[in-house]
Each structure stands twice: as C-alpha cells, then as structure tokens.
Amino acid sequence: MDVGAIVTVWNPTADDPPSKDVQELAAHWSPSSVLDVGCGTGRNLAPFDRPGCALYGFDRDLDAVKVARSRFERHKGDAISIWQADLRTYEAEQTFDLVLCYGVLHFLLRLERLQAYAKLKSWVAPGGLISVVMFNAVTPIPDDLRSLMPEAPSDSQEILTAFEEWSIIRHRSYTYEDSHNAGTTRHTHSIDRLQARKPTEAPT
Ligand SMILES: C[S@@+](CC[C@H](N)C(=O)[O-])C[C@H]1O[C@@H](n2cnc3c(N)ncnc32)[C@H](O)[C@@H]1O
Image (cartoon, rainbow, N blue to C red; front, side, top):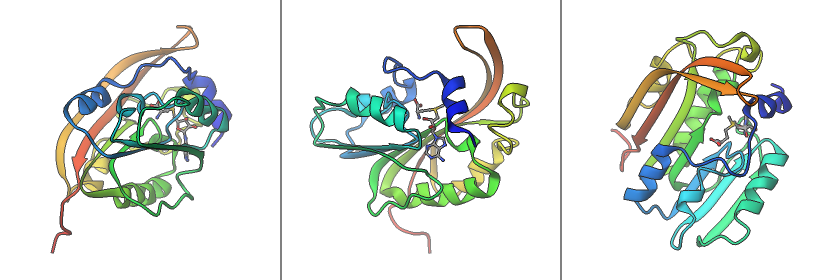
C-alpha cells in the first residue's frame, strides 16, 4: 500500500470538520478516553478535546501525525498522545472507552483486516463503543483507487459478522457521490458506518 498515494487522494487539511456521527457521539456521551486509529489530521478527536477525556491517536503517515499534534498543542483534555504507527503491526496495552476507525480498513488486505477487527475489538473497554467507517465494493471501487483498496469488503456482511456478538447501536450502508482534487475527480462510493457496544462480560 502506498501511503503517499492515499494522502494524495484524500487531501487532508487541518481544517477538516469532524464527522457528523462523531459530533453526535460527543454531544451525548462523555467517554474518559478515545483512541482514533488512522487518525489522519485528528479531526475526529477534536469534539472530545475537553476536560475529563484523554485523547489518543495514531496514523501510519508522519505528516498527518504532525498536523494532528499541532492541532492539539493547547488541548483541553486530560492527556493527549498522537504517534506514528501501523494498525497492522501496532499492539495497544490499554483499553479505551471509545475507539474510532474512519476511512482506514478498506486499505487493508482481507486477512489483514480480519486481524485488525480483532485488535480493534480488544482495544475497546467492556461496555465501551467502537465507531467504524469504511468503503465496500457494492459499488465497484473507482479505477483510480483500486490499487489502494485491492480487497475492500464486497459488502456489509464482513463488518456485521466481525461485530456480531456486540450490540449494534447504528449501522448504515449507502452510496454517495464524492469529489477530490478540488472537484476535478468524481467518485461514487458505497460505504458502511457502524457503531457497536462491547459486551460488559464475555459471552459464555
Ligand atoms: C481517508 S484518511 C482518514 C483519516 C481520519 N481517520 C479521518 O477520518 O479524518 C485514511 C488514513 O488512514 C491512514 N492509514 C492507512 N492505512 C493505515 C494503517 N495500516 N495504519 C495506520 N494508519 C493507516 C492514512 O495514513 C490516512 O491518514
């Protein structure tokens, strides 16, 4: 996977607004810790930058990590740590009330992604939440992105199966039009947005 190419199509900026569903979570819940996996420039940590919450994020791309760090130079949260790491190799020692993973998993190969689901699940504290957004190939992955997402999930079944023993708070699967490179590149994407709660006790 070419991370430089991902950054080129994604065009991150420090001004990107947080995802609406992250804003909604932050409006209705006060987790004490949030981990953003593949945090990019940190837009989705911003709504939780408040007293009582510790912020954590990592991304494979060092430039994005630097932007995210500078975004939170004067953070209000209890603690903050943003570092460079690859989801495929990183192991976390602690758990978090909320784990976010937006726009990352579709870049992984299928087997890598199945391992990543297990990791992400292990990083959520009992009773905590995960919120995941990723493309699927219900609408074929656009030609210019296919080399970046050679094994995107064929449909929603994969993520629903990965979280089948959790309670699904929200799941939406839909198609939308997107544009990149100042509107010069247009894409149709199909996407899954899933929020799920980890059981407080392991199923017997
Ligand atoms: C589309 S951007 C989304 C960034 C951020 N989650 C957001 O919603 O603004 C995808 C991000 O995933 C990161 N990424 C891709 N593969 C990764 C991996 N294996 N481990 C960690 N980060 C990865 C990229 O560097 C990029 O910052």
